[in-house]
Length: 450
Picture (cartoon, rainbow, N blue to C red):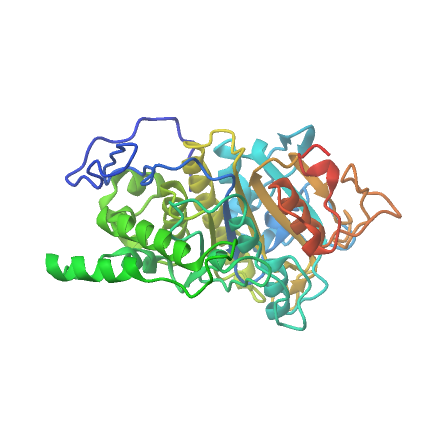
């Protein structure tokens, strides 16, 4: 479990120096720490979307009920849970609210990260089918059947601000589909099936002779597009030249070593990278460490990754696995957020979005598990959005609840929260045009003055 970290200085120089003074800023970095590899200003928004696969139980996480009372439409199932999940956490203060969070969020509270949270509760997923809900929570736009309609939220956030020379991989997606129908091709995600595929992607090819390398580079640099010189828009040949320059720098500086996790003492300690974790690229701590390295190095602006699997607990695996698996995922997230805070202490330019495709039923089924439930919750850490809880589910039943659009509190006759509202609010808070979501952002919660 994640423990509260005290601020400490990075470890000293390790046995290999990555950067040798070729950068304009003369930055050097050791394998034992992460540093900017390029002389570029920080990106306007650093975005990480972490996804729990299978449908999480919000009663153990983002939308709990206290165990000191009974509810007419909810089975708490306390006796079926492992011991760490049988007691409530103390309420915490987020913004101006006193908020109850479930025991799976213990690492967030212990690391004092809850003040940076915005929690959306009572989101109508309008489906309890995995493929449909997975597409919906990926794009925050209602899919066409099971097919995603629109761009992934990670693609949208990758497009914020100018394309900087450091962004060799502006948008990365790990074990999660990614879509781009609204934004320039430069922001289409580089996809991979597991987190250990990042390092091979950045390894330089076998060296050629100096003469061959010189001729190859000359041929590349001499290539031109067929666009007429009178064309005033962005030129393809100029974009390719910049891409080649950035890629060459990346390979020359051997950025792949940033992802040699076992040799990075700071990462090993921060993320608890035991030998067993290092052998499992799907482990939440492994995924979190890779995501952080991509963002902190400046290689990527947006990273979407599956942080945990095994949430689809229909049988007695619910009591044994649902809570511990959520806890393990949130512990890795706490470590990642603490890591990103070293560059952005107040997380003003960093957004960490945490989702699953839907929730699980308030009633325990005949197999001592929980089935699929449409009233979902989403967690956001950082960014400019107002901190606190927007939305609610009905206290006795976990059903959808009408909400006041400005206060975010339960209000009969108010709005029903949808993924489109959440997506539009996140996008607007980052300065994006949110019109693609076809719902107005929750203006009082964007943190952006009109």
